Image (tube, one colour):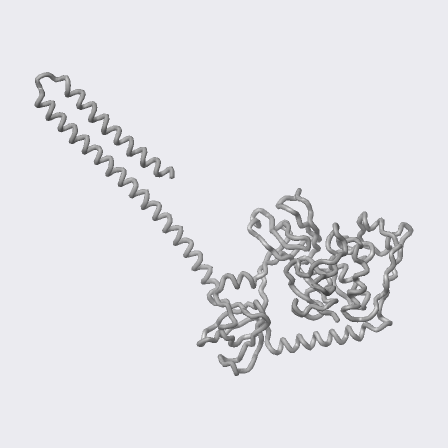
Amino acid sequence: MNRNHKVAAVTYSLAAGAMMLASGMTADAAPVAGATAMASTDEQTVQEHSYSTVAGANRIMADLVATADEVVAEREAAAQAKAQARLAAELKEIENVAIADVNDYVNVRKSADQDSAVVGKLYANNYAEVEKVKGDWYKVTSGNVTGYVNGDYLAVADKAAVKEACRTVAKVNADSLYVRTDTSKDADVITMVPSGDDLTVVDDSKAEDGWVKVAVADGEGYVSADYVEITDEFSYGETIEEERAREAAELQQIMQQAGDNDADRVRTNVPAYNANGTQSNTTVQSAAAQTQTPQRSYSAPSGSNGAAVVSFASQFVGNPYVYGGTSLTNGADCSGFVMSVYSHFGVSLPHSSSADRSVGYGVSASEMQPGDIVCYSGHVGIYAGGGMIVNASNARDGIKYTNANYRQILAVRRIF
């Protein structure tokens, strides 16, 4: 817009100059007496010169406009070429990347034939690298499995599919880390996460400014980039041998846990209280925990299945959340709550929401049963049935029921 104004100003200036020149020359010629013919000739000359000046100004204006248009066109072409080059570079990076586009899994076969032997499996959103193409079949490698997959079950060189399959992770490398409402050390604290936990990154555009936006149980917040290690994670397929070994290990764990849960090995919840009414073995106590009294009674676990776990855990709804705590009565954090509930069933679990993703054996979210451990980014709870989890939510709400799908589920682990 400013460029057009400047061109117009040049035009008006030139045109005005031409008019002034024409007017001045006519005035100078008019007073000469007895020189009519000369005046007439001079006037004609001036008019012709004026027309010539205006025509020249018009040509200059046209040249300026044309030049400006050329500059704009060149800049737009350069910007478009740069964008195309960037897109080409991005596509070049993923031209041999395939993502398993399935709901459950697809078989990886020894050769490009539907009747060929199965050598492994790709599960939903598994990452694979394409080695070659043979008709409708792609030879891929994912983890330790290499073989052929029909192209109908793959998204190849698909930016959206790669982005969806990728999980950007911020692993905490401090003893504990505040998650804040904004990119400032003065911003309110949403929650804290322990060392070793990994959080799903939802936005790293401000990483250069020292902050990363992550997902936690209470929503989304910012953590200092100085205290996290950011990596991109993909999941991979497995060979038939790996699948069999995993299933055998899971079966052995199930049998072992079932054998360990006889009546003699079940520990009951008989808390020991100090004189002020607090539990003597509490590691961390909040003001709410310090006012807890032993008036509320709790039943010992009954049974050794998922329903029994939920029944036992539900007794503690309403009790406080305490960061780092493991007391079901005086305060626990999310993983401390799950750990302490299962400890009463003879099951030892880690005090870490990220480590809980590898306990027991995995099931899909659609197959969740009461007692299953449901893992999120920076959070964990116990599936209570009816689409709900029982969990130590936060310092504001304490232990409560929450919709199981309140956030993306990263893993579901079954103990019983």
